[in-house]
Each structure stands twice: as C-alpha cells, then as structure tokens.
Image (cartoon, rainbow, N blue to C red):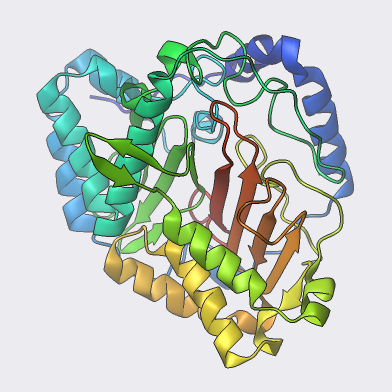
Length: 394
C-alpha cells in the first residue's frame, strides 16, 4: 500500500475561517511582518541529517507496525502521510478541535485494542516519566471537559514584539462550550499519525497530540529529534478518583529555580525586551529563531546556577527515551558557552505573566504562564525545539 497522502492545501484556509471572528487576519499580517524583518539563524552544516544517536528505533518501529496492523486500509490511509507533507507543521496546536484540525486518526474513534496499540507507540517513544506526563495531561483535558460552562476570559494583553498565536477568547476558542471547549476537550480528542513509513533505516515522524500535548518525534536510524514538542496544562493540580495529579510540576519547579538563582544584576541583564502572553515559537510559528539571543550566557554563571539550568532543560529532554535523552543532554550542556537564559513579565510561579526562555545553538525552551481560561488558576504552555533538528534534520 502506498503511503502517499494528499496534500492539505485548504488546511490553513479552514483554520482562518474558524478563527475569523477572533483575529486570524491580524495574526497572519503580523506573522508575515515578522518573517520579513527577522533574519534566520544560520544552522551549522554539520547539524544537517545528524543527531546525537541513542534512539531506541527498533522498539518504536515494532510498536508502530503493531499499531498499523490493527487498522483497516482506510484507517491506514488516514494515518500515513508522505514524510514531506506540509500538514505535519499545521496539524498540531494548543487549541482544541475544531479550531485547529489534527492529522491522522482520533483515538476516540478507535477500538479499545487500537487505542491501546496507539498508546504503546508513545510509551515506546517516551521515557517512563515522559509517558506518565502525557497520561496526566490527557487526564487534565478530561477534567476540563467535565467542568460546567463559564464565560470566556477577556484577553489581558498581546505580545509587543511577536505575533500572537492565541485567538481572542482564550484557549476554548470559538464554538466552545463546557468547562474548556466542551466536547472538543478530553483524552479522546487526541490524534496519531505517521509521516513516512516507520522503518529502522528510513526517516519518519510520529505525530501525536491533542489540546495540551503535541509531540513531533522524528527518527532517522538511531537519531531522534523531539522538536517541536508542546506541553501545557490546566489546571496545574487536580484530583482524579482520589489521586492528586500535578502535570508539569517538575517543569514549573526547575524553571523557577533556574531563573530565581540569578543575582539582581544578572536578572536585569537577563530581561528579554517586550512582553509575552504566549509562546514566541509555538504552534503556527516555526521560526525564524532570533539571530541575537537575549538573556545571560549560561557559561558565565556559577556552577550551582548552571546546575539549575541543566535541571530545567532536563525536564523537557528527559521526556524522550532515556538513552537518547542522555546523549542530547550531553550535547546541549556542551553548548553552554553559546546558550542564554532570559525572562520577561515575572519570575515567580504565581505571576500569570512569567515567561522564561533558554536559547542555545541547539536547545530552545519556552515556559509561559497563562491566566486561567477554564479555571481560576494559572496554567502553562511550554515548547521544546532543537534549532538544528526542527521537524527532523532539514
């Protein structure tokens, strides 16, 4: 069976139609302006088609093929795309359906056996910690879906130096109902797709995501890229059947510890120009990366401060399978002489404007506090990218 999939030329148009009442035209205009005025950061030639190695490719391919074997021919046609299909860059978001349509098969439409096989793919691709985090984020989406309807919040501001990717009205978006988007929120509204045939030798991507989690994991032999990966959560903490859950608790703790380890003078030097009400390079904004990093150079910090930056970075990288994550962390730490940490808005976890960024020649992390959209508390959006391996090694 051919894996060639039709391209999706109408996807961007459909998204704009869905967002028309919430400022899509302004968003596109701002994005175009940014692309024209911001030069692209050069990527070293050695970075192309080259990763750190260590991927558990055999285990991932075995799980992927086992999942595909449970599907009908029609379902396979929906799940499989050409590796270069541009849909991979538009079919993930922190917005629920129908605001942004996802690629592939919806978990809620699959049988129990098929759902279990799909989740085995993610269990193979992620570390134990990373997979547990995914499970808890999906449970948070179920929590939101069960909440009663509430009025949408009024936006508190717009980034002054970057196009926003959050339509007016908060993450519920147009057509929302219920606690945070109605029927379009919940663990059943997660999708799985593959770009390229899963193979130990070829290049392919596993794309899995829904509302507050989106994974774009590319494999090429024993090389693997986790870029881009979005994680978020609302509420920060909640109870399910007597169990207390706090997804992203380690990301919150290590991020605040890293930025608060800076001295007053370092904090002043680390302040990023402008303000942010969401991610700079989030869904729909794949670049360019800034040519001039902002913040303070990690190599100039004390060993204790550097250890806190490493702990922060590790909470994202360690979502990947353990051996590959260790290889990548070694690479990223070795680049601290060209890696910066910066902040904007605030440096405390209870400030809904707190924004922290790591920007290196490879590693890029953003942590963005958000006002509650469906609850009264703060929630987070985060993004991890590898500037040398975004969507693979292009």
